[in-house]
Image 1 (cartoon, rainbow, N blue to C red):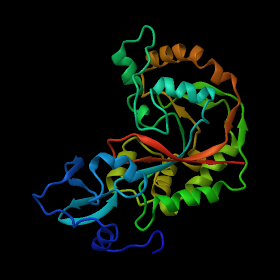
Image 2: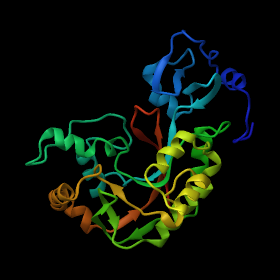
Image 3: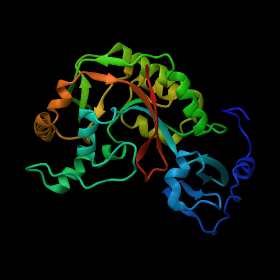
Image 4: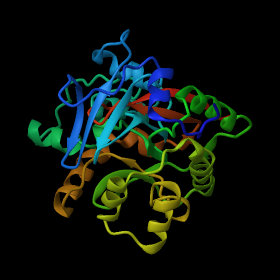
Length: 303
């Protein structure tokens, strides 16, 4: 069946070797809950819940959703296209130190101490950003459309980068974006903006439509009319001419703390801030479910 097609729930459960949707009261593998919807995991008999990350990133872990008496199937995994620094570069080494993890692994290491900062505050600074790893978004996280597989997505990425040149730009600068400390180009880089726009459009056939709850969450931040139109068209408001290439380093901070943290990071980032930016690949990341970090699945090299 072609990617993007629709089949009944029973078809998808049967085709993937999944048991029937559990009836009320039967054992379930909890993923997450909200007040209007209950979601539980259903895994093939040969897999255990402990292998959720590996299974989801191979497209083999699914969730059944029950809401208002209706039942549907959805892939609990989310996927995204990111810039991630090449291994053994100054930016990659900084990211591993700052976030205590590598982008190609779900495992977290202990965070390194930062002088004059309490360990609890050090952890809070990166609590949200750490789960994404050091990256810049090219196509924001999305769930796969019914009928699509992660292997098809990875294959499309390989075809997408073929013949595309790597992008060189001036060194990044330490900056503020929407209250976050981030690394950004001093000036917009048209080639990166064009690459991101191409990623958004070319891979949208793989994206499941955004749920009403997701649309409401995005709109709660206060969107312009243009951003809302992009949200409806592409599932994310900050695309096309609203796109800003950035590498988030912290959560949202008040101005005083933001200035303090930027001052502490600037000497530590000296090798990064001195090196030209090179975007040499587009990376496919996977998040098994909302409790798991995003992990790099594929790095597709630009030429």
